[in-house]
Length: 255
Image: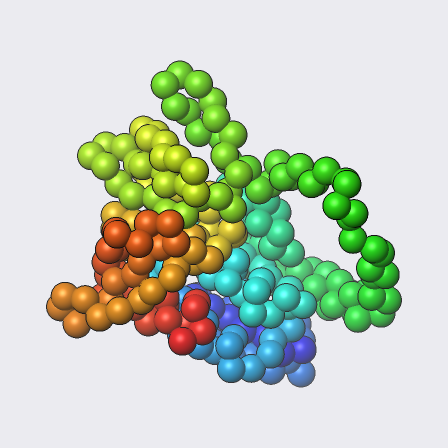
């Protein structure tokens, strides 16, 4: 089994690698100490299993997991975290499992066994048969709850279709959510949206901006040797990219 261990803390990486090799001596293991290095690693070679630390030094582990799902759709992903509340988040994101720090050898072994079993099952399962698509007379399928987000606007709960969100920016103590049809203002921190939307292809390009990667239309040089982007439907707006975010953004966009 080919495994990547992604953690910005070297002692944690080495301890987990030691426990993996103790349980599965034939494993081939690579390691990465940041989200950007991890993206470069998983884009250059295939992996069966990824152990991803939740709190990386340059991006959320949830953001990396969402990107990994697109790059390596068949890989198993396991969150490594010191906080048990992320167990729920793991399953919300479709991550296969989680382990808690400090690592328990028995737990690591059980997770490895389950991942091996699930990988073998997926390889043995036949591909699903694709039926005919819906006819023009059939109504469009409703957006599933997992692709919607509830926000509070003027004491009213609004259900937003997440694919319609183009970008979100900070505005004082609130945030403005820009969608394809209108804008909404909610009293919420941008970091909260970053965590909620990471599995849906969103990336925080700057301390003030969270963007839907699918809506980026242009990327060009900007001040201080950095970059800026323009978003579909908002071409008059120039959104700066933090210098520390440039490498990760290029890798996420495949450029």
